[in-house]
Amino acid sequence: MKDYHVKPGSRLNLDKYDSDGTGDYKKTDQGKEKAKAITAELTGRLGELQERLYANGTRSLLIVLQGMDTSGKDGTIKSVMSAVNPQGCKVVSFKAPSSEELSHDFLWRVHQKAPSKGQIGIFNRSHYEDVLITRVHGWVSDKVVQQRFNQIKEFEALLHESGTTILKFFLHISKDEQKERLEERVRDPEKRWKFNEGDLEERKLWKNYMDAFEDMLAATSTDHAPWYIVPANRKWYRNLVVADLAVRAMEDMKLKTPPAPAGVNFDTLKIV
Image (cartoon, rainbow, N blue to C red; front, side, top):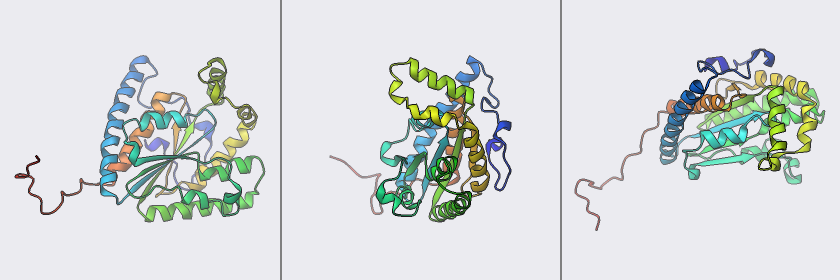
């Protein structure tokens, strides 16, 4: 998984990252099924660890998902979190800010949605929209973007110091793969509800978005809030990578099952 970690301060060229990569797994039915089986084990383990996280109530996990339209943010959540108790997991999507949100700093609405202790929080798009779409469309200057990079790092440092482990995933798909997925939405009546003509306009700005992603990933990947560039053309491999890294992060917390209530003798306790 080290291949996907963005080292702090590194210079990036996303063209050098294989969006169709599958690591040690062959791009065959056998390789796919093997990866799916391991992912199932990992999601089960994640469910166990999430229960321990909830029971302890001392730490939290924040997962940030970013990527171009159709990169698979929804699919990743559905697959990787399939064994997690919904009571201990919350998904938040950040869309265009309301008038009230615009009257505050850009991180105000985000801080309110950060996971509380004992919870897994997932940002399906996030505070990084404020240094991506705003930059690509020229709504903010490069100077403001650089300021926001620093503000984001300070914000994430605060979360980390308060007991939140942060994982950030850029779901990396190719332009050709996005074309296929958009066409699939058009062909399939069951998926047409996902289609948005605005996605086509954003697709025209692909190069601009890649440039903005490269700057963002390099500027905001830190030791306490690392970015991972996840090959996402193959959904089954994407899910495996995210599940593996999430489990590792949870295990690194070294949480133990809380002790039983004091003063209760469970050996002699009878329930009638």
